[in-house]
Image (cartoon, rainbow, N blue to C red):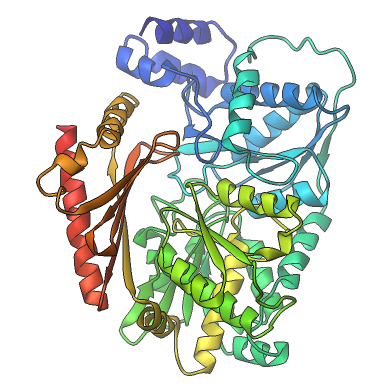
Length: 562
């Protein structure tokens, strides 16, 4: 508590923006509030620095981002004579302002900063690093979090989000920096350059180049011309990119949800701009009530995630991230096995998914001779494996990567992050193919389950509110690693084998009947996440088993909170 109060007192003496100054005044005399904001320096999580905006070292603000940028600049200038970074931002509150601030910090400290003029999707930032051959990138975003959040993603020269080992190195640089100190750098400064439209054009051309048609392009475009789509960018950065990609594809009708069209970091019609949540589709469903479209697509504010709902006889059914991943992998396997696109399915091809994503795709891969490898949560871990393939001269062996949290990547090495724009395009291709056969994506999903078995996946979470709750989450994970769960009367007969990944802070248990339980803290929010995978001879059986296991897991963890 003394350390946090000392840091608070230091901040009070500094020249701060008015909003930060007002917040410090407001929490004066409130030790719990002071501790929550100053108990530690915000750390790199699953996707860089991310947290609520506000005053303090454990918040996202201009001071914290200046400190981070000073550390990144020092790291780069020690290794390169004249390093360059590309900087982007989404539509969140303060994102544009933060991007301008960090661009100036980099330039002041000898790093050329190339900044996008408008809100830009994450996959385009990753693409730009590679396209411009720069030393890395910075994305100002909190992805799908609520409006109170923002963040700072760091990309390396491959266009990858930095992995954990690089993050730890950068943190040692960042900790040494004083964001309040005057710059003492001697030497040539960098420049701030606003990027031209050619980066956007090159990215969209790469999306076009990676289009995977299921038949001759002219036949596919004829089918696509009969497809109707409703799209919402959720007030984010995806609008121009997704609509242009779908227009190039030849999609017949694309309607935009007007209330969620304009960039707006307040997300006025959607409290949580996350396509995983049902609420993200409410405005689109209202718009489609009278004039129905075949599919509804949604991208999150930084447009690396894509969610979808499909029209059925009984209305719209929202697909889970696992279901979309299964459908995409099925489509890719069938197209490549038929020799479609630039590649043909062959021995040695590899797909990657996170441990917490559908195990069904492993069976699907085996049927086509494709190895499916599991990685730990965070799309950067999938991309790290892609980079290893490239180093081995096997970059063409990568065919697909996905996470159950609506992250997907297909194509050559045009980008090194999950791509919501590409995913929208792929979803339309899949839907148009099924419509041309008098079917739909749900029916195709049922066919996949009939062939490979029914699997139901449920993701839920125990949500916490205060920074002090991290200790409670840590205590629960420690008890799991020490084998406490298998001692519980209800769990003892269910658990076949436990896997304790302490370094990644993830617990996994294989259960009777081929089912699985995974528990891990979120890398971006105060949540303890629970993943259930259950099989069955019918879909109802799989759903019932998954629901029972999910309920049991929630009760067990909630009891540990008491």
